[in-house]
Image (cartoon, rainbow, N blue to C red; front, side, top):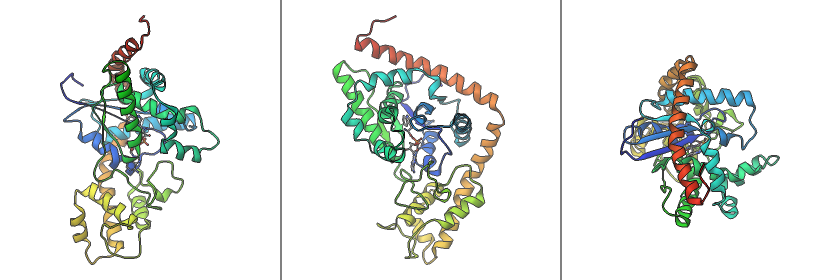
Length: 333
Ligand code: TYM
């Protein structure tokens, strides 16, 4: 990545399991498209994953697979940095500092904390609670102007902005106050089994989630089983959560507007529509899956790539961390 005057982007994803169509349509496809216009820094947020207990061998495997899959999606190492969060120690260090500028009340209001504490009632650890301060550190370390995310991360991004503004106000301008980028379509892809719930990596129902590495026949089966309604009319309307979700997915992968989709399926049943969505998604994912297999066959390339990116990221992050420490009043080494 060259030094330029381009605006900077940071975003990350947790390598905590399979990567879903929701991750892809809500965030990853924008990571890819922004690479021409912005200086992009991307990470696998492995520090975030341990807020929920991970099996060590599975975490290692998921991290390598996520690295290969994101390269396959189009993260381009000639244009962007792409590293593993735990390789850049400054993230954890700034997170500690930012914890001291984040209020208990603010963290208590985070809906993801409330949801995850219900789901993992046996392990409501301090990391799960302070997770948004680590996410703020990720973003603020690089002076990111823009953060492409799905709608579910909006509250965390807003807190990162509040922390930046607070720190700048106490000392003097230090952090760039980042903007979120949430796409108009695809920001909240819903579960195929329960379209009132977001599609999630951790859903136990395999039919609820499309994974980027699903076989075409599984993709088709899941779409055919997708929960819809009994109206049998393909149109975007309040209360038609299942159809609205399928229309959103179809629109993202084909580029067609909702009006065009309604026209295309006028007078046709849901069976035809679901088959068309399944075909379009499988066709969109086929080249990504092929590239994924090629990257997985070249582990040496991946290792070299994430090490080099981490080294460059660390250089940028260290400058910011040193500035923060100076402002606070820590004595320099
Ligand atoms: P994570 O790993 O849960 O998700 C990665 C990205 O995918 C988006 N996303 C979705 N978008 C649409 N529909 C869905 N059903 C859906 N599910 C997930 C998420 O909004 C996210 O953009 N805390 C973050 C990772 C992170 C991060 C950061 C992001 C760590 N540090 C700094 C931005 C900046 C997370 O858990 O995302």
